[in-house]
Length: 153
Figure 1: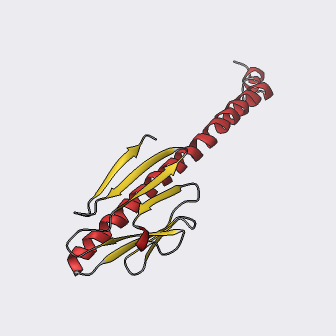
Figure 2: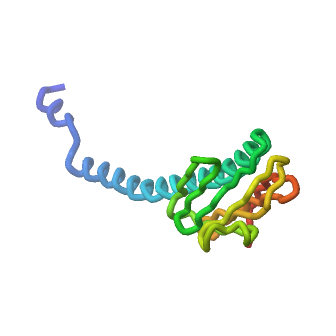
Figure 3: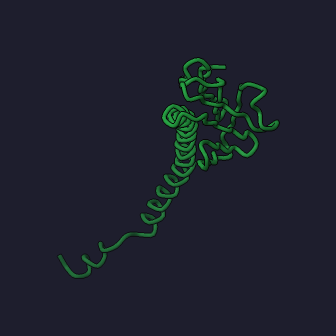
């Protein structure tokens, strides 16, 4: 092969580069929104785990220490407070609903579930939602156990 023909075949043409960059651009345009949705789904699952963990931890602490322990759920601030100084802020896109005993409401936005030393509780339900999909965490009043179900409504 001559030197002229070798130089002719080195590198890429402008058309080849434009096609390659177009393909990369299309892949990025599709993958960035999908990765954002996946990240939000991961945050949602973590929020459900955090609420469940707080409820179960408060029950366990009450049984071990022999002192009542409460979990306060602020619906407006999307903040979970349990124990003495355990605070967890949930993502803004997560929706919260509660059904608890009225006499344990701190204010219009803050519901409380109280766990007693024998493992029982005031009972209640915390619903964690995103995009019309809800997970229901029900706390039984007699045994204080936390049951998780997917709410179909």
